[in-house]
Image (cartoon, rainbow, N blue to C red):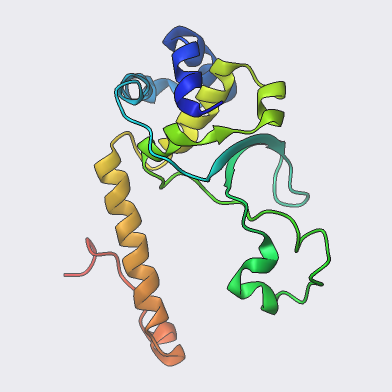
Length: 182
């Protein structure tokens, strides 16, 4: 089932309750979440191979308590990535043959709508819970797609700037944000 179908099966009241239950800091942003919820119902999904996975995660030594994580997978295996050769992992290891997990917060909302939600997520979470976790992730950078797109472009610009620097330049001149450079 795609996210667009889940949105049709979940009410705003149920989704709001799930947001409030799962995320302690969402109350002040609730008008933004509701606006995005309603906007998503008007958008056309785009086709994508990316799939949504939601799960509880706990990283020993990093996290104080488990948290809910939303990631995307599109069938690409870790061993297919260009950087895999630098990881000193066997090509037949579990890691090598696991799918790459992608952050989704910068993906266009139309693409989110076209993503399949994996079956394990369906078994563990009700529709309003799935939608609440997806809303939280997709609005992590803000409640406006244009602002999110601009933030992504800024991050890409900074990454390109770093790639093109020599090691000495990186140490002497860390890249500045566009709004800081004047």
